[in-house]
Length: 257
Ligand SMILES: [Zn+2]
Image (cartoon, rainbow, N blue to C red; front, side, top):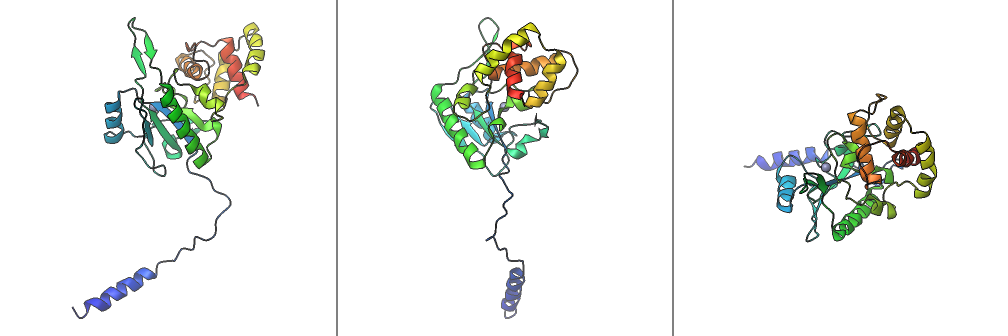
């Protein structure tokens, strides 16, 4: 026992020899690791949504319940949540590493009485909570409006959420996302009606907008699917994936230099 104390003192002295860190100076060039905000619907009822997002191999930073409206933080913002999966936007991939994920509880797409797929509506109070949350997160991390996206944008071949009933226009009105000027869209539409653009044009513009889309020069299944997701967001009245003049005009306005 007589030798134990000197040994302990030596160990403590060794600990003190590690470099002291002076944090009083700060670099000008830095930003948040969080560059994107991704919105989802859970596609499940409440109990299952919470169970999956807390116990399975998927997660999100936030979960917003529909009724009563409640907001849960399930993953701290400085940690990575597993919500995006294989994903891409403007050439950036692995978006879990650079994003915050919000899961909005909503049943998503379900078969209606006639067998046609219908999407559940979002209660206005739930959307109010989502908008308030998005505002806070965007301000905290300096996230650009063109980087507040849906799962349907970054993984269009696998995902449609948050779907055509999600009011993206409301986020646009709050200045939270990029939105095409309706007057410009109306002005450009007649030219596209007179001369419909070909598949190569749509693919080039969809890629410029941000989607990962192969330039096949054909209106193939991938292009139809991505056009459908694009329409769900910007023109949710019709999202059949057909390359109509209004869709071309919206895409043209969004991607104009
Ligand atoms: Zn999702």
